[in-house]
Image: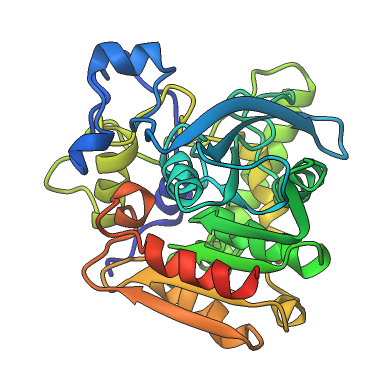
Amino acid sequence: MNKIPFIAIASLLLVTGKARAQKNALTHDLDSKQTLDTKEAVATDHYTFRLSDKVTRQRVSFHTRYGIMISADLYLPKTIDTTKRHAALIVGAPYGGVKEQGSGIYAQNMAARGYVALTFDPSYNGYSGGEPRHISSPDVFVEDFSAAVDYIGTRSFVDRNKIGIIGICGSGGFALSAAQVDRRIKAIATSAMYDIARVKREGFAGSLTEEARNKYLDEIGEQRWREYEGAPVKLTPRGAPLTVDAGTDSISHEFYEYYSQPRGWHPNSITQFTEVSEASFMNFSLLSYIGSISPRPILFITGTRAHSRYMSEDAYKLAGEPKELYVVQGARHIDLYNDVHMIPFDKLDSFFKQYLR
């Protein structure tokens, strides 16, 4: 893996900055049954996939303990018997992503397999509430998952003892952190997991020096003063570049392919957060108590070509039993966002069927 300067890493991990009008199509090149043309994409609020004829989708909302209203999509099997109680899954979007992208694909595919499935926009982002916009907070993003458990567990057709979570990319770390303290979560699966706090503190693959980190923290401190005195809120550089060339590093190129191209582009997924948000991640460890999740099970999904693979492997080593590391042959990090031929839905189904009996 190429070494990448810290500021570049910070931006490419922030998966998302303001989308440009140049994005005039929303087709993705995977399963033709889930492909959208431009006209249909606009009509469906830029969902990057087709709605399966096996499920229904409805917009719902719920509030967090901070009083933030969360915008969510609830996916149900078309054949669901709402007089009975069913297993439910909460799906978290990649860091900087929104519910109309990959997490929606996971939710509808799991709903098609019989689960009640909920996916949402994180606080301060997408269609969810919170000001100022694009704040990123480890505590708040972890709370989003527990608030989703509050909501889903109060549906009459959901069994409170059968609630699981799927966290994609950065949501994998947030989901695990939530499960450490929220024992209502009975089973956890992560896919292409990123430990965002670790990467902010250490840099990708430990590449950040103490000197560089302190320099960045000094800049954040200065920016706080500027904003307190009325300066505009400063956003981090875009995590997914809008253009690439021969000199673009492989990770940035990968995020460009997803977030800045029709495959995954969405106007709410800007791959940027407020710069002053960065410091909180450097002061917050997401996985300090991952061992305490046991005996609740964890499934770590990663790919043989995923640049994030080491984070799943390290978290797997720290986790207690029962646990499993499932490696998808040939899959890159972003392939586990939305490639329905790469994402191991059958494995996810068998995992949750086993542990959410």
